[in-house]
Image (cartoon, rainbow, N blue to C red; front, side, top):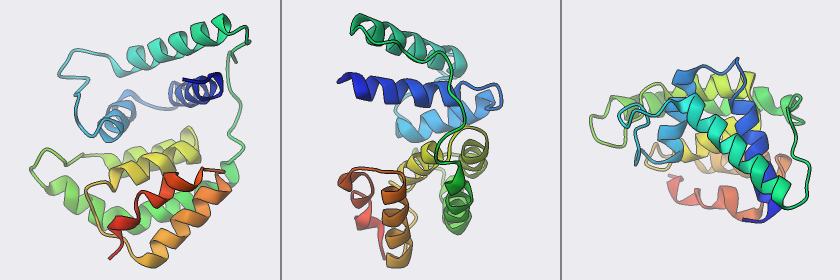
Length: 171
């Protein structure tokens, strides 16, 4: 992994490791990010300890590259997009809640409050990426929603494929 990606991972991990982000949010986001392939609690892994391990590994890697890893992070430069991300979370809330009621392996209870908490207390960029991930198995989105996602992705300075991979969800 190139150093700039390691640094991006480190910054995201530091934002999520903030005391304002409770453990249940980390568990829920991990379920979204891993598509439920690994249940941290069932495996006896403390999500905060796991996240701090990621921070340590990133710092070690950057140090080996001769770079000075950040010790802490300030507010996200994307704070001004928090409201837009919260709006998109609220728009898909009914579909996400319906999905969470599904008894299949793909349901992720608590995803809506975890996404909202992340947008406000960690970083709207992280919340938006996890929102996209939570849509992997539904609900359907409209073309207008998708167009807003693309526009938000541009404001977050995403590469062209971060949001376009979700076009198949449009109804």
